[in-house]
Length: 104
Image (cartoon, rainbow, N blue to C red):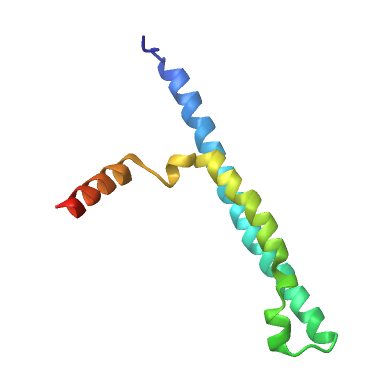
């Protein structure tokens, strides 16, 4: 039995979805801007402490925040867009056809 939704219920549901996607993109932009700023400060600090530019750029400690905050962004993306973001129905169909063609 399929549920019938009113226009108002559809609108509220769509609005919530749009707000969720909007929050994700705002978080993603914040992630990039803040991490560029922090990495720049860390690199400049390393250079001031006597490291060469190449040493400061290649020091992985300057990028750890990208990794850990990035894991959070990844899970927020899964929550926002779902696992189907990676495996959509058309992807499944293409893979089936590809495997069938391999057998021929």
